[in-house]
Image (cartoon, rainbow, N blue to C red; front, side, top):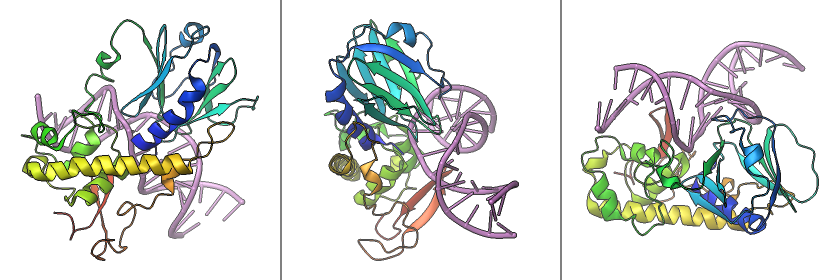
Amino acid sequence: MPELPEVEVTRQGIAPLLIGQVISRVVVREPRLRWPIPPELVKQLPGQTIMAVRRRAKYLLIDMPAGTLILHLGMSGSLRVLTTPVAPGRHDHFDLICTDLTLRLNDPRRFGAVLWHPAGSAISGQPGLFDRLGLEPFSPEFSGAQFWQLTRGRAVSIKTILLGGEIVVGVGNIYACESLFRAGIHPQREASRISKTRYVRLAEAIQGVLQEAIQQGGSSLRNFVDSLGEPGYFQQAHRVYGRTGLPCVNCAGPIRHITQSQRSTWYCPRCQR
DNA sequence: CAATTTACCTGGGTGC
DNA sequence: TGCACCCAGGTAAATT
């Protein structure tokens, strides 16, 4: 399940390989992803030179003169870089064929996306996709004080706020649970009833948890070339996620599992208030 | 307007 | 071995 760390590790893996490559052909085997893959890509992209590979929230942005190719891995997507011909397998929906390599998207559940943003308008203003995304967790604008400010008057739980992405992006279910545990905040606590001091702790917890996951992913991730980018963070030891009934690493009490808005939450009832 | 629910997908696991 | 069932979760869209 790609959250921000896996997307960032993927970006760091493919960027040095892709930059400078000239696109020669695009192959769409299955256009039915979250949204249909725009047919015009097949004509727009050939001849374009890849200038940069960026990330916004969990979106990968591949910049070229005519515009930006937007990729989202959904919940089961992965990218690999091929330098020799490899027969496409099941769920290999999209190929970006370049001079020296092919970028191939595999996505069994098809919750991912391949979209196109023409040059000329700011991508952050793309309606419904980028215009209401929250702050990047590693940006200078994201702080505990700002987090506190943006949650005034919000009656929903802090876990819901984290997953919503309208205040801070990149935190999925795993790292929402882990961040709240590290900050000592109960997942069901109302967002408007958390002190500024505790929001400072939460902001630091989010940054720490994500940063460590990126580092671990980066060190254990296989080469993106000619191999599947097996996400390193699957091997990471979670402190609460998925640990129903197991002893809390802090107080040894049993980790509790609950459901919040149809999503699993794990937490320590003694350490998180 | 805020909050909540639904829908989209398939692989993997479980129980019978 | 097969089959029905449930769960995983990112996020837009629909509904309350």
